[in-house]
Structure formats: structure tokens, C-alpha cells
Length: 186
Image (cartoon, rainbow, N blue to C red; front, side):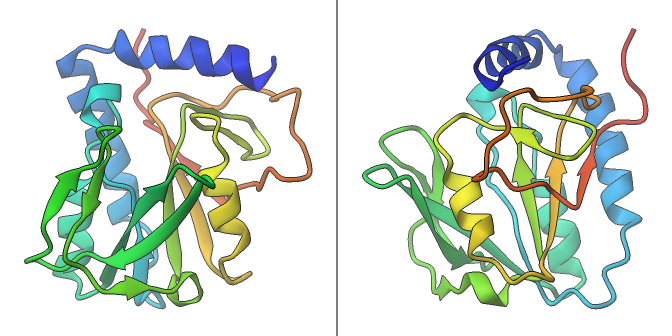
């Protein structure tokens, strides 16, 4: 299936999830993150949750890495060229919604993509080769292309990967891992 069709299907599937289903699925995702080997991780990048799209709540993940004294970076979106700029998320960093309703840091120090050891990536669905379907603007593919080759790229998703995304292209970047719940719903 092609990305556009998958995007439509999985946006709807996510919207159809109940509050209790999301809580149960997130619990499984969080446990898998807490079980990761983070011995060599100094700085992570994570997305701030878009609640209106029922994205995974990243606050418990942020709190976990903060408790391990690992630096956290988040992004600001530039829709004129579909790129991301990265900033350190400190305890006193102010977060505000941009004109698109995306939470972004307001008073933060800029971070370099080259300093990131681990990036958590939002997605709608992935395939068995760890290619992903996002919202379709290419923000994360551009961003991940600028990260160090040894930077770990982990997607977070509520749904089990499908067999194949049929229209992968040379700009798509496969992730190192996709974490999804081990307790799928019936």
C-alpha cells in the first residue's frame, strides 16, 4: 500500500482508539523504552506530543531520561522549508503552541543534530524493514539525514508494522527500531 493511503487509514485508526486503549498501549511502549540499553546515551531527541492527533504521550519518556541525567532535545518546525531546528529541553523551558498547534520550546538553547545519540520519531505506521509513514512533509527524513551515522533512530507507534510500504524512495530513512505495544487490541 502507498503512503498516502496508509496515512489516511492510520490517522483514522489512531483517532478511533479509546482513552483506555491508549493508556494500555502506552504502558507497553514505556516499558520497552525503560528496558533499552542507554549506557552510552548522553543526549536524546524526542517529539513533544500532539494531543489533537492522539500521539503517544512523551512526558513519561522525557521524565525517565531526565531522571537518568540524560540531556533532552526537542524541535521547532519551519514550515517554509519543512525543516526542524533543535533545542535543549530543560526543566524551566517554556513550551507554547505554534500557529499549527505544535508544542515548541520558547526560551531554549539550540542543540546540534551531531550531538544526538538517540532520536525517538513519531509515525503513523511502519513496515517490517522499519520504513515509516509520517504526516507527509519530510521533516524527519531531512532531520535524520543530518544526524551522525551512529545515532540510534527509534520510531514509536501504537500499531504493529505492516509487511511493506510500496512507495519508499531514496529520501526515506529506515529506522533502527520501531517500538510498538506487545499487547495489541482485539
